[in-house]
Amino acid sequence: MNVESRVLKELKPDCYSSGQAISKKLKMSRSAVWKHIVKLRERGYVIDASPRHGYRLLSRPDKLLPAEIKPLLQTGVIGASIIHFDKVGSTADEARRLIEEGAAEGTVVVAEEQTKGRGRLGRSWKAPAGQAIALSVVLYPKMAPTQVPLLSLATGLAVRSAVEEVTRESAGLALKWPNDVYLNGKKLCGVLVEMAAELDRVKWVVDSFGFNVNNSFTGTDLADKATSLAIEFGREFSRRELLVALLNRLDDMYAGIQTSSGLKAIRRNFEKVDMLKGRKVVVVTPQGKIRGTALGIDDEGRLLVREPRGKLNALFSGEATISRAEPIL
Image (cartoon, rainbow, N blue to C red; front, side):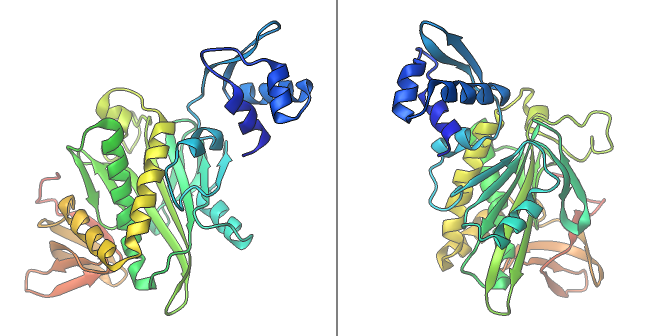
């Protein structure tokens, strides 16, 4: 815990903490305590200062700060370290840089604003300041490279579980292979899993996602494609609360996915909320378009699509859309 976080820990909402008491407990000068109070205010904390009584914490900012997140985590791996940026090009790029520097497994990179985020197929994704959650997690999973696609599905399940926990609602929440979470037929969250691997082992994985929390898409070309929790529920949500729930649920999923029983559970749970299963789909792959009926996924997370003439395809990757002849869930 850094010094700023230790000072914050001493501030209470219901009573004053004297500068002298904080100084003595943290073994620093009163002027040093004041400097950290100033920094906390700059980060958005509202702190009352009284010459006779000391300091009192009046309100916390809805920011994804380590001091706000770490004390609330109930994880074994995820969140071992949290690196926070006010603004960043790409959390995934920062995560890969940290891997080169020897980052511990479970290191989380999170940003208040992301300007050059990436989605699948080279698409860009921006996180407006204070509205979304842009996040990347460093992982060193003990699994075969062919099993890594299941990590993307597990992440989607973790997001869905966290949304259900915070909103107390599950209706309309569905997963779209290979990496999207949908709410009421529109995209709520996208997942991107990148890895470095040898033939028989994974060296590292960067598990990233962009989650629309309080975004507004009115007047944009995404208005009929994307949504946010604020749009669907008609109120704003605490990103801090959502991030804590997300990391806790992701930790659960990650622990399970590295066991054979856990892998089977991922498949079972995914198919319960699979928005493509049983639907007519068009899947764009590097080899061309495949049209048919989606039958779910196999044990490696591949999408199973049966063509009209009976050929069964097991697809590791691709861009799947529901046929226009089909109504969207």
